[in-house]
Length: 178
View (cartoon, rainbow, N blue to C red):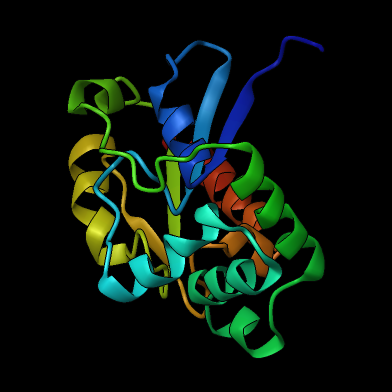
């Protein structure tokens, strides 16, 4: 490694992990997609009905039902990817997720003040829709939310071009600050 700057990228719980980390001089920005950690997840009876059976008895049918619910319009039309279904079964069998973590304490998130941040979520995200995370994103990170039409909670999987596009936005934001 050459010791140059890095951009941290996090999706969902991975975004909460990134926000919980300590900023440092080598981190030149954050790209966060459907971030946990800024607000409570939106939990509806329908979502709980699809989510709770999945870790209790992870089957292809239950994993696919959850994936369909988490996906936006683009993925809902084509159906879940068999490899993602297999991955979801492994996750349910071998990890214990909180499913809906509490938001991080504001002082932890505010440590990132002054760091360029691009924050995006699918317009159809069932856990962290734009309206739910927009206020905390502005208040704690001084950034707006990029609402991506047609995508759900699985944005990076649903649209492989999403992360390169968000990294490009971050690069443009860094250059406009100079």
